[in-house]
Image 1 (cartoon, rainbow, N blue to C red):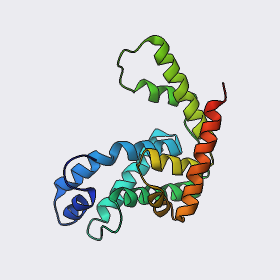
Image 2: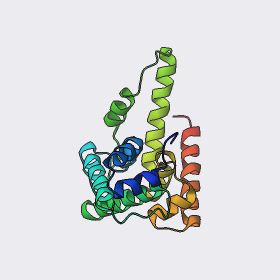
Image 3: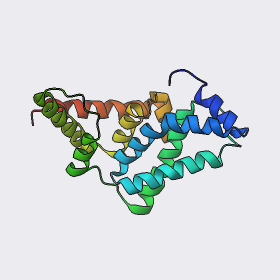
Image 4: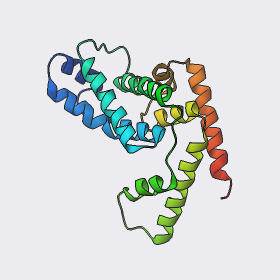
Length: 186
C-alpha cells in the first residue's frame, strides 16, 4: 500500500476515535473492494449497496477490531459474508453482460496507443470477463480476492471460511480454467 501507517494501525487508531484514519483506509481500499463486489454481482446498484454495507460493518466494528490478521483479509471476509447473505436472499448472482463490460472498459484511462492495440486489449478484456463469468462462484471469488484484494492463499481461506488447501485448490482450478479459456482462439 506504499508509505504511511499500516492498515491495521489505522483501524486501531480509528477505533480510538481518529476519523482521519478511516478516511485513509477508505481511500486505500474503496476501488478494489468495489470492483470485487461489482464483478461478483454484476449490478452496479447492488454492488453499491453491498459496498456501503461492508463499510458500515467496518464502522460498527471499530471499537471491537483487533489486528489478528491483515486488515484487507478482515474487510474481504466481511465482503464475502455479505455476498453470501445476498446470494441466499436473492438466488444466484449474474455476471457482467457485454454492454456492462464495454462500459467498464470505456472507463479505463486512454493513453492514445495505436488503434490495433486498443482493439486487441478490448478483445482480451472481453475474453477475460467472459472466462471469469464461466468460473464457478467459489473459484471466481478466490481469483478476484487474489487479484483485486491482493490476498494470499491463507488470507483467501480466512476470508471465505475454508482451509488453506481448499482456497489453494479453488485458485488453482480458476487459473487453469482461465488459461485454457484464454488460450483457445475465439
